[in-house]
Length: 312
Length: 283
Image (cartoon, rainbow over all chains, first blue to last red; front, side):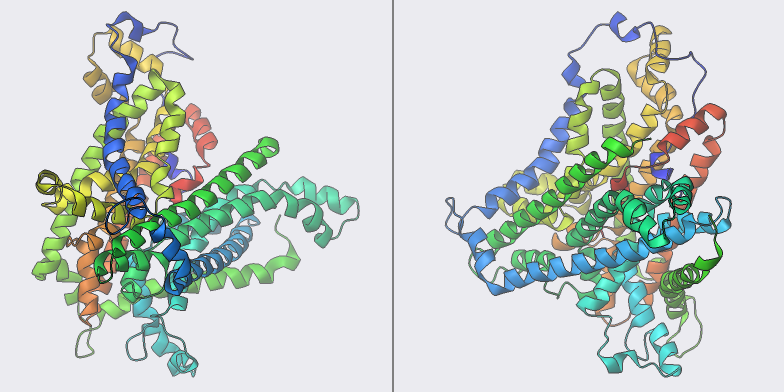
């Protein structure tokens, strides 16, 4: 997909230029204005509001009913839940960092090529489609490639040239293998996110800096770096949120048996072995919402601050 | 700015990217082509016809997909048009509400549904949770909202909506007629884009359906994989990949074809930077 495909455009029809002068709507019988938005509001209140309500109330309801903080406090006191948060955060941070670094590198390698080069088109289109390659199919592709010797196609090829991955503790069915899958969609996502910012780096700035005697390092330190920092950080935040919330790939690759917050939620809900496991699962859910909400708010703040002076 | 001294670092990343991104796809194709006795077979790729369980799960997913697309368009197109036309101040409400499905991870949405299923009475049980079609469709519509809203909103912004609607209304068209015969054809590529991405989302969604125990295609793929035979699910992965990419390339093609014309090209350039959030998938 080209970068602009999601914001597809429609052709104009030559029925007049500029804003309309006649307001046709006012010539008809006016129904109350809110009526038009009513279906959307009713729909979201029921189908988004109800599950959300269930999560929030359930998180603060005890096994015997009544309001309680015990679900939330248990998620902070029991090591298995604390470890799942640690696991999710570590996974999200390193896959977002790897995605951000390699994505920027790849995007820059493309941006410095000629605008007409086929490379640019291939990488842009490829990023668009690869960013959507996630979840169950992605997990199975990685199992096919890097599965245990005798099954994994790439594993066997590497074995035949003397690189025995599985002798060095590698296993695709592991949290590291899962991270490798995440990097697969994080990199293209970063390419999509960072390319506009890289294209915004003007050649003239580099030339001006060079003309004033700046080395390449000083150019990046004082001009390129500071200009790129806000879009880089905001993109990193999106990648982080993307990985933190993800679960489908883990479900397919590890059958959910990995200590991440989503698997603890799924386990708490389907297990029902201990008293009020459901409440704990929902409390973990609320905490996940809080984390992603903080990330999205930070994202919005950075984007807004950056757009204040970089809009052109 | 092609310069001589910077070639090597470009080469490294481009070759690494080529291997890393094409490797798993090529391996998956190779893997799925391998028969039990080591020969080459296309049997795995025919599983969605020959295997009854896969066929019925695919049918379920396609049914849900079609229904979700219909509900999404029926709900979102009139809403976006209405807000643009009559209550632009509500744009901020729509912006905020449609971002919520991104802030609420799918697994948390699934947890909410699970609790709802357990706490609700017989009526809701029968009304909503009796079949995967009624249980999943309404919530997939919610999951699709972030990108459908943004895509449709961008499409509507790019046309002179008020003039079109006023002209049609003055000629005596009903509101339904205005929407179907005037607005829809003009935001065709945005509508098709939303429809395709929604379909792709539904065909890939596994978290809600697995936790609520409905047998959709990805759930079936995982359970076949659990039985120790990865050939079929890997083949299905390749096929779903080709299907999704086909849809995405079709959107791209339609967008470019309709992008002819000077005025539109200007809009296109202005819109060439999509809302970053559009690219977030439920992975």
